[in-house]
Length: 147
Image 1 (tube, rainbow, N blue to C red):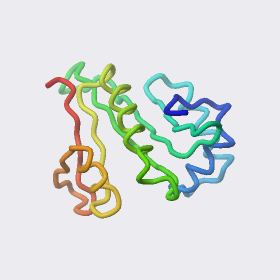
Image 2 (spheres, rainbow, N blue to C red; image 1 turned 45 degrees about the vertical axis):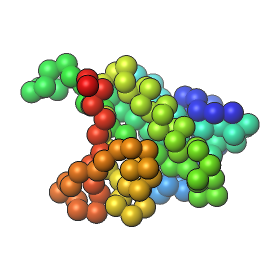
Image 3 (cartoon, rainbow, N blue to C red; image 1 turned 180 degrees about the horizontal axis):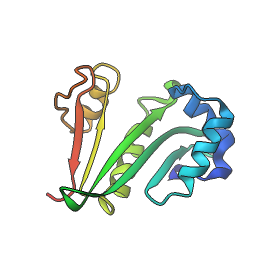
Image 4 (cartoon, rainbow, N blue to C red; image 1 turned 135 degrees about the horizontal axis):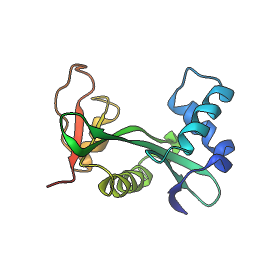
């Protein structure tokens, strides 16, 4: 039980989570995308395994070296999703802790947006503070690992 890195062997249990979070792509297309990402060391999909059932996941990317910022890599949390029936049980917190652990050894800054009503309260409860961004309903959150 707990958080672990997902591989193609996890696809059957991972697809319902991706679909539950929302995607416009078919399962075949999504599987192809995941196969590409699973081979890319700049990406990781982390899943919360509850004894054989995946109940949440997070997808994180290291954007790499930045033209103006040099080797202070920028990271992006793309997804963090927990089955609605399992929210409030610590799964999201465990996933976010694993995201931070992964990112802290690879990037200087990790950033993400969260919907001001649906997601931001969760991140704020973890101690993160959202800042306004061009999409007013999605504040930007950031962790600076250089501090």
